[in-house]
Each structure stands twice: as structure tokens, then as C-alpha cells.
Length: 231
Image (cartoon, rainbow, N blue to C red; front, side, top):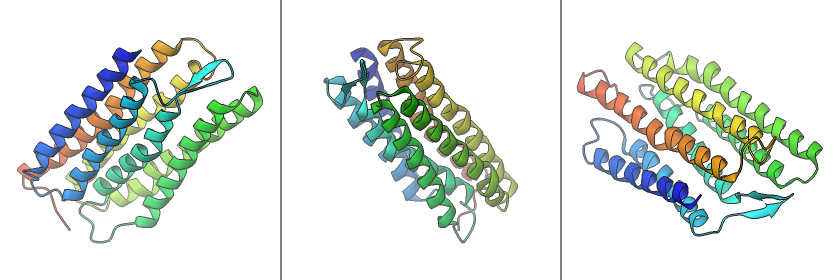
């Protein structure tokens, strides 16, 4: 288990270095977008260091609950949604911050529900809170593919296409979180803590560092082609 946790920390460090390097040559992308991309692996990597040295966990209902994961997710996942929203509104003079706040609120409800579910000894409360988290995730998806996508469509076609690509990638990756939760030790117990840890290493690497790299790389490519409009 420790191998996977330290592997994650190393991957986050690579992300920090990459995004700092790109920020030195921003190619028309606002500095805040590089700052968000850098903050995500910094914050996430810190909590995985805590777990790697034996902290960030408690025993509840005959299982180990990694509360440090939720401390990571409650900050890093809203930052991912803010980054996605900035891509959706990149070329627009007026940003829909109310929509961003709604996305973040639904996301925090989702993360909090998962954390509380992990602490419940009663199966009724555990699965009830899990379902609440799934509903909150569906709300997040609804906001992404409804009003946020409509907002992105008001941008020039190349920017709108970039949003669709990164929104689809993030959505597919995020479906994996409730699936791992319900199939692993927190739910049906089809696999143990080591497999659970490995999956919660690989998936967050893809959904944080890799996703941020894809998002920024696509924007930088538009800049190279002279198609990146900044407002």
C-alpha cells in the first residue's frame, strides 16, 4: 500500500514541475489557470504524504477509512471544476460565477456525503449517504452538460470544442469514484484495501494531473494556432 501512496506523491510532484514550467511561457493563458493546476497536485500530494507515513486514517465498522482522501478531494475537486469553468468561459467577457458556485456547492455535498457514509456503521445510513453523494454527482454532471456547456457554446468553435473534450474526459473519470467506493471495502467489499488504494491512486492521477495537463495543452495549442481569444 505504501508503494502506491508514494507513487502518487511522485506523480503529483511531476505535475507541479510541469505546470510551473508551462507557466514560465503562458502562451496567452491567464496565470490563475496555471496557479489552479499547480495547487491541485500540491494539496493532493500533501495528503497522500500524510497517508504514506501512516496518518490520515481511522478504523470504523471493521474497516479502515482514509479521511485524508476526503480532505484532499474537498479542495482539489472544486478546483478542477473551477478550471473546467474557466475553459468554458475563457473567451467570454462576463463569467457566470453563480454557476461556478453551484457546481462547487454540489461537489462539496458529494464529497461530504461520501465521507459521512464511510463513517457510518449502519448499512442503511452508509448506503443512504452514498446515494445522496451519487445524486450530488449527477447534479454536477447536469450543470456541466447543461448550463456550462451552453455557456461554452457561446465561445468561438475551437474553444467550445476544447471544453467538450475536457468535460467529457473529466466526466468519464469521475464516474470511477463512486464505482470504486461501492465495489471496494467501503461498500460490497469485492476487493481489499491494497487494491482500493491502487485504484484511488491511478484514478486521481488521471483526473488531476493528466486532466489538467490535457486542458492546458489544448489551450496552449489553440494559442499556437492563433485561435486563443482572451477576454
